Image (cartoon, rainbow, N blue to C red; front, side, top):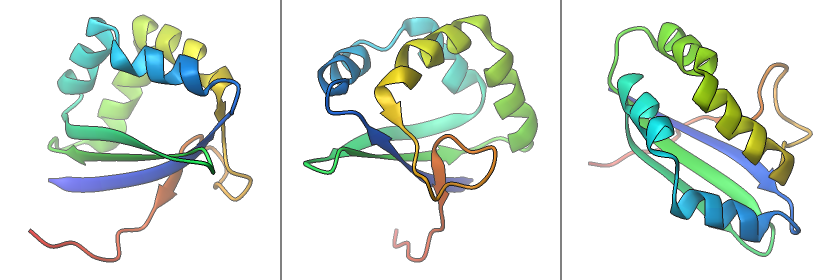
Length: 109
């Protein structure tokens, strides 16, 4: 199992809609997340900066293939299309990233 953390901005004007969407995530999106070996997935909001922090654990054996499978899913693409206009990616993210990956520097079980 590998842990992943990432960060992303959230627009002030999109915050209420983002909360509403995530209070009732589409069942097919949740099923695809599970199918792609993601567990213990959480998103946290830091206000007033409007930063989203995402954490999940990956339990599969081919992360790139599972992420490609998720990205190819039409329902997931639709979900992303609804959410992305509400988000504000960080200027410091790496090329190709939307959510900026973070490096784990401490963990305690």
